[in-house]
Length: 441
Image (cartoon, rainbow, N blue to C red; front, side, top):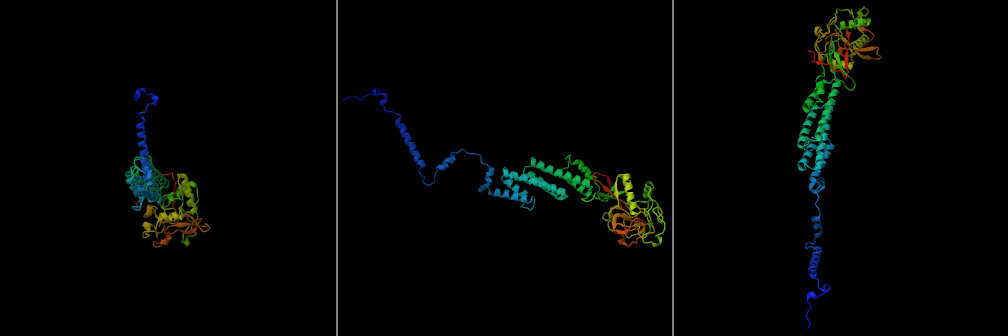
């Protein structure tokens, strides 16, 4: 019997490989595990999908995409409602259905959401537009109310340090400056004062507003006396789209003032007659001798409408003011209704001749002589313009004859012993005369 060969005596190529058994076992285990993973689970669910999700790299979640998911449907509804309210301009009203409340509710739930932040800024922008609109329209009460709500909204939304709030303040400031500039150009003291008070409440210390606040406080109001000329001009109408701002003489032109014009211009006297006085039609009278006693403080009479217009042109050239006769509409505006009992001494009715122009009781805006002493020529003509309009009662009209104050047509081209005139002054947008309180009645 031969002995078994010693392992060292066996050639290397014929020796058994010792690593084979462990490798085979490892391969078998791997194949078994693969079969188990591919086999259906007891519940019938495929577990490979879950394994893939768990092993996939995780990315940060985009909060904006969550609005469209079912779990964020309420936020999406809030945002949609807020944008509908912006489209309807429901900024602060009605309660429970306005953009301010809706976007603040969304902000409380998702303060970092980009669409919530965009809605907050859009709301603040629209609030600025609405406040500016109220300022342009002169509704200072609504402008003040909405500005306060906007400021509170910006604080609660955390926007007071952002460009949105700075833009809101600039928009409001620009609208205040524009409105104040328009009031200054129109000489609208009442509106200007309301805007000054609004600006002092909303943005009192900004250097861009200060010069306009100063000018706004100097604007005249109806009844204020303008202090820039020797004649007593009383402001009565701010400018409108169709006419400039207007002031009117506090009394009629006096005989002394007209005499200075007649001497300087060489203008001769007009033919004069007494209205209703047939026996005096052929008496020789003129502005210097009207047929009754006068001094230089009485209103001039016996002047034609052409004389009055020539005086306005002469005085305008000397003073640099824009002067003319008033229209019937303007006269009604500053004259107001007739008042008082028509007493001769106090109101110049039922007298024999005129009274000093400054001596009668003052009426609307402190103006004197509008319903007594002398009637007044107007710029309007009647018919084919052979007649001119005159307004106001005169010393010839009895106290109870109130219809005498209405504008009426009389023959032009001549003067009457109970008709004088006063002038109106047009104020340009660049004029800013100082003003004093109204004349004491």
